[in-house]
Each structure stands twice: as structure tokens, then as C-alpha cells.
Image (cartoon, rainbow, N blue to C red; front, side, top):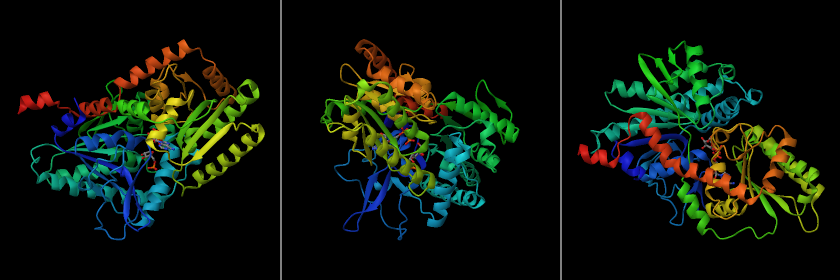
Length: 498
Ligand code: ADP
Ligand code: F6P
């Protein structure tokens, strides 16, 4: 049965995230149009919201001068998961540009992002950014409350709406929504999912206002993380920061007279959609060389520098791969206003230049580097036709690229997945080659092993990987989230109730 059956019958869903699943841009004629956003959150959540005709509260990626400017519908040729999201289902949050800069570039991406990825040396701590984070979270909470009040007056008024808040941008919003809804006697259920790691207490407590973060999140009925380690870190922080009573075995936290459930809910991908894309996508790689593929936002957590160094080491230690193998790295520009990201762009450009300068021959370049977004069709073709998928984050909440690569392995013999143990995906994708990206020699050996792996071993590993991702797909993730919220009602249940 489909997600629509599950959610539509359990009331109305409001998804709240920093970014809408598209950004608005002005085209040549000066008209606003949609461009799909990249990132794990959008890939996972957009199909769910579209299917259940839910509302999406978020920032449109542009500071609109006219607050009443209508959101355009999607392009009829759009095949991204976002295409079906009608503009009347979108609540666009408007925040003063200066506040937004301090909230998004400052507190979210220069503080929480590095800190939660256990890279405190990269984090900055700034009171003004924190105050902007509070203001922005209040604005998101207010927009969500407006949507909630409207729902109360519709035909679904009898149902209890589910508010599903996403990610580290909005860790304060739940508590304000809960309090206001209680004051106005509006029932709702509040759930939160963190798409990035939750760090250990010793790192988390470096944030000067860490108590407020926990109090904000504990406004929810249920909080989901990708893996058990992140759940335990969170429970630990609640106990040590706030002195909450906790149950580690059952992952429960007592706070403000309520019990909040914490659950490991590893995110999945729309597996069948990627299989279909891989079946239909025309070939784009016309090469006899084996391709090692990397696909990432250009982000320092993704281990891109280590990956290039490991590839260089491979060519040094195993020269038989020269002219026979190329690394295709696709890096989508991300958070380009933040200094660390600008510096990484420079470092990558230099490193690609240096390695290519060192090894290129008249007929071959070792690295092909695309700095940009590629279409879903091309992405599926790259995944399908690569011999090795190289996923080497230094730290990553889950990593959907690893799962998308596996879904697109429809050829025989299939490619080999290499994954870092520091990604959530490394915890669950046991049949991948696991490689520590900090140790460059070992990473080079893992690539060599993948390139020379016998066909029967490739087939065996990939069969297991594909089976798991097919079962634990994004629909399964959503159902698990709703079940953990106590909101899972199947179509059959609904028929019985009706
Ligand atoms: P994150 O959420 O940190 O960006 P994930 O690996 O979980 O990392 O998700 C990244 C998502 O963005 C995937 O769905 C992937 O297909 C998409 N993506 C990443 N890079 C590109 C790119 N260059 N072009 C198109 N899509 C991309
Ligand atoms: O998955 C982590 C995440 O931060 C998402 O919340 C976000 O949509 C994605 O990465 C891309 O980041 P940004 O929205 O900052 O471009």
C-alpha cells in the first residue's frame, strides 16, 4: 500500500524544514520559477508530502520583495520528486535577509553543522548568530501555527494533525508550537527528525546554549535519529545537561511532566524510482575506462580531499590502473557564502589540478571533476555505469548517495560500493567495503580491492545490499516514523474505523 493511504487517513501532515524542496529563481524574463534543491532531506521527504497532499512550511531560497507574490507551479517537464507539490500546499517563510544570514550561514552552517559532525575546531560560537537562530525559529513556528489554525477549520478538523519538523535548523520550534497550540486548545502531534549526527555529550556541551536546544527538541512527542548511537548521545545529553530522568534501554526521556520517545529510524531512498531511472537512462559515459564515482555536495564533512589523495596513492602504488581507471567526481555547490566552503572549493580545484597535472597522458586524465548539479537521468546513468561507488565521509548522518548507487546497480556484474564507517550508511550496509578515509594508504588499498574484485563476490555483496535497501526504502522509513509517532493507520484500519 502507498504512503498516501497511510498518512491521509491519519489526519493532515505539515512538514516544516528550513528549505522548501525547491528554490525560487528569476528566469531571463524576470519571472519566478522553481529549481529542485539537492540534499538528502528533500530526496527523502518530498515524495511523502506530495503523495499525502500535505503542507510544506519552509524558506523559498530567495528573499521575496512582495510578501504576497504567488509561488509558481512546477515545470511540466520536471521529473524530480518535488514536481507534484502544488503551490497551494506550500507555506513560504519570509525572514529579514540579515537575520537569515546570521541564522543560516552563521548558527546553522558555521556552528551546528561542524559541531554536530564532531568537528568543533571548525565551529564558531557567536551570540548574535544564536539570537538570529531564535528569531528565525520563532518565525517558522508562527507560520506553522497559522497553517495549523487553518487546518482546524477544514473538513479534516476531527483528525489530529501531525507536525513533522526536520533537521538542525529548527531545533527550537517544537516547544513554541506545542505551547501555543495548548493555549489555543488545538490538538496536534509533534515529531522531529535529525538528518545529521547527534554528537556525544563532550562535544555537544561546547555549545554555550545547549540546554535551550534540548528543551526545544523535547517539545516533541517523538524524536528520530538515523542510528542508535545518535539516540544514545541525545538521551545522555538530556540526562547530563538537564538532569532528566531517562530510560536508555527503551530510549525514553522524561521532561516537563511528559515522556518523549527517541527512536533510531535509518532513512531510506525511493528505491524503485532509482531502479526505473537506471533502466531508462541513456548512456552518458562513453569510455572504455573503469569509472570510480563520487557524488556529493561540496562539503568538508564528505571527505573529498582524502578521497582525491587516496586515488592519487592508488595510482602511485598500483600503476597498472593508469589509463584504465578514472575518478569521476560530481560536486554540487553548497553553502557558498560560508568561508569553510569557499576554502574547500579552492583546495579541491588545486588538488584536482595537481593530480591531473602529475598523471595525465595524451589519451587519459585521471580525474574528471564536475562542479555542479546533474540531472536525475544522468545521475542514474553515472551510478549504473560506474565500477566503484566511493562514499568516504569523515562524518555523515546517513548518506543517501551510497543507497542510490546500490539501487542503480542493475547490470551484471555489478559495481562495488566503498563506504566510510563514519557515515550512518556504514553502520547498516555491511556488505560494502568499509574504508577509513583518514588512513590514505588503507583507502587506496580498498579502491584497488574493489577494482580487482572477482565477479561472483561483487554479485553476492550487491545482492545483499540491494535486498536490504529495497525493503528498507523511504516508504518504510516514513511508515516507521508514523508508527513511532503512534500515527500509523493503514487503509484497512481506516476502512474498519469508517
Ligand atoms: P546530504 O544530505 O548531506 O547532502 P546525502 O548523501 O544524504 O547528503 O544526500 C545527497 C542527495 O543530493 C542525494 O539524493 C544525491 O542524489 C543528491 N546530490 C548530491 N550531489 C548531487 C549532484 N551533483 N547533482 C545532483 N544531485 C546531487
Ligand atoms: O541532510 C542535511 C542537510 O543539511 C539538509 O537539511 C539540507 O537540505 C541539505 O543537507 C542541503 O543543505 P542546504 O539546505 O544547506 O543547502
